[in-house]
Image (cartoon, rainbow, N blue to C red):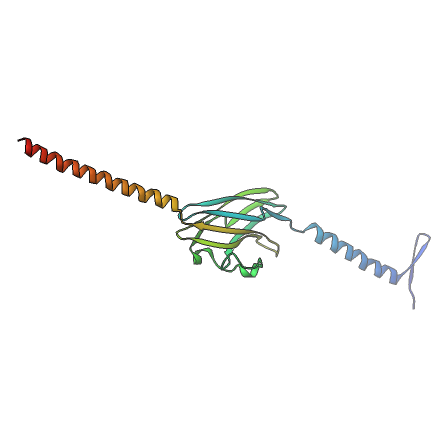
Length: 190
């Protein structure tokens, strides 16, 4: 049994109306999903942090988003500089390899651009690669930036300090000699 419906001068079959509802539903779902897509970006894509042991090494990072809410931050490192740039290779917490990091771990964002500061510090030489990640409270989207960290011993600073100690040693030695000679001269003149 074929059912039909007449609207104005046109006659439509019931099957056509059912198919039209499916098409309309599909278009509606696609339009809603594209409207609620999260856009988030980070700049620069690569962060080079290079400096000396015991000093804060910092860089500015810009985060853009059309999202209202909190972004959660995380920093992870790999074993060395030679690892492949695969997110699964960055699974070491900074503290485990002797790096102290400072950055906003939670960032409130309201459809705007935020400038943040990331700083590293270590008491030993390190050369490694890592990632800075930000992702929203809910959802699966996120954004990241590669970190190249090189922390070296400041040899020049050590040489200057050593030189000052040597000079200070000579000055103290010279003063002692002057005191001893001065006492002997005083005894000799009496």
